[in-house]
Length: 128
Ligand SMILES: C[S@@+](CC[C@H](N)C(=O)[O-])C[C@H]1O[C@@H](n2cnc3c(N)ncnc32)[C@H](O)[C@@H]1O
Image (spheres, rainbow, N blue to C red):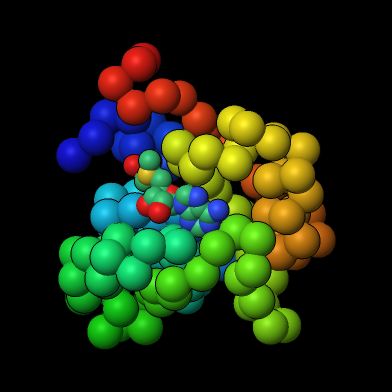
């Protein structure tokens, strides 16, 4: 388990009822930690890579079966959540937040419910 991801998720103070969206969910490591904290809430993980979505779905199969988690192949730029809005949106190591932070932030904030919060972390993998 990644200490980096664990600390990030802890800092989000996830509540059992919250609706959470992760952009660039990768292998679904944060997803597992988040879903453990949910009861009536829901987690959606998107990633532009079908391979990553397949890996995240497999890793979190129990949460998906329980209706707590959904994984979708989609990009930050093109994701369409319909009417759904989220209490917390997170993105870790998704490059657009480093290269064009204002644009990435604006795209992600479209999906926040009123009073919702965006959580972003970017560092170069292996670079500290
Ligand atoms: C470096 S990995 C980080 C994975 C995980 N969030 C973590 O912190 O370990 C970046 C992930 O974001 C995805 N990604 C990058 N840009 C994206 C975008 N614009 N929209 C959706 N997914 C994106 C990649 O496919 C990859 O799975």
